[in-house]
Image (cartoon, rainbow, N blue to C red; front, side):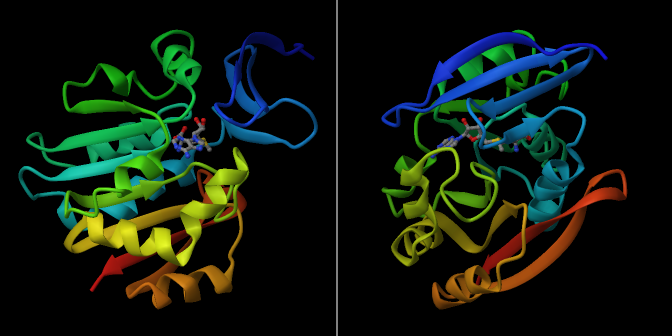
Length: 225
Ligand SMILES: C[S@@+](CC[C@H](N)C(=O)[O-])C[C@H]1O[C@@H](n2cnc3c(N)ncnc32)[C@H](O)[C@@H]1O
């Protein structure tokens, strides 16, 4: 059995916790230091791709769209968003932890085909929530995968992201018929209700973690009606 090698660690801003990047052969893992588990593994990324494919399906042929991805992780959702949108579209990726961006420019680059190098990618270093303060219709699609579900996991502050106030703010940053898509490791019917309360039209889709097998993940598709 090939042992894991530590490639880097990073403090999570304003949190005190630490992220670690490890490698074992061609497999990479980003996880919270300690016992609480993994945020992302390079071998299992089908549902991260599906988040972008399902979220962007309605704008695939549309010119000049703008998509927001929060956060970067290993870049799979970002790469899929670039693939699922027209050549004139832009994809903004918000990432809280500066080292995650550096890791993607370095050892993680090949995992998803270096989507940071795409000219249509714009990086926002900071909390994705900052981008919802404008309340101006800016995005056609917002794709959120910052935790393992609609609960603060990386950072307790992320709990606020799923509150009714935040969902209203996100709704305001979407264009008419815009889509908010959220990745979750579990299905939480209470969260679907919360999205409906924020006046989204909601569908949930179950997707498999790894090429039609593995864990079942949930994608909330919340359309601004
Ligand atoms: C589960 S990973 C994302 C995986 C990604 N979908 C992929 O395809 O690899 C979560 C990422 O979100 C970042 N993150 C966590 N909270 C954030 C926030 N509030 N704003 C921006 N990024 C955040 C983490 O540092 C981590 O890089």
